[in-house]
Length: 204
Image (cartoon, rainbow, N blue to C red; front, side):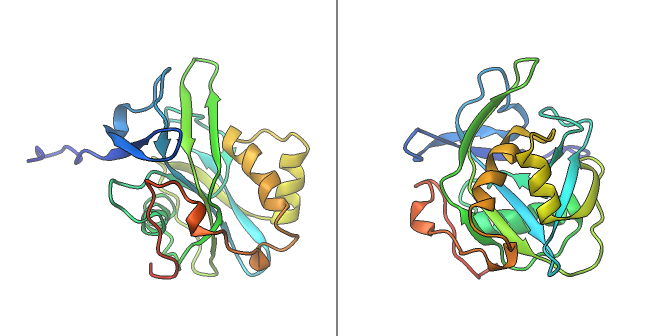
């Protein structure tokens, strides 16, 4: 039972190099100087004008606080569908009632280390969402601010060495290779997702 005033424990899925589940770990303590490889996701939210929702991470976050990045990131709970996890985090971080996300980069993986030694180490499939709804309402515990920027401008900034999160800097070139217009990018193959991941397209 969770005590009054406490949040329920959230767990992340630990994986091996082949993407198979090898257990779970508390989300609150998984990031350290020896962060184990775990399952995550990234999401880029676009509108019909080919603008992308760019966010600045909250300054209280333990990894890359105050850094410009993609729209949303998160970790699927054990047994949670990746698409459902994306929808959940978009609601939690940005107040967005999201339509079904589209898988874009099923095999993305990265490892990055902050100057203080804190490590991110993730198998991190990348998703896209087309959203033309009400203005986002950032949760300031997660997101300092959010702004719509033309995708071409943002991708040019990142490709030119602009200061963004390390995962964003690696993801954007891969997304640019999919074509000039995000609304026309092809969906990725779910069969290429890590074995520990579940994803059912169009059911979220």
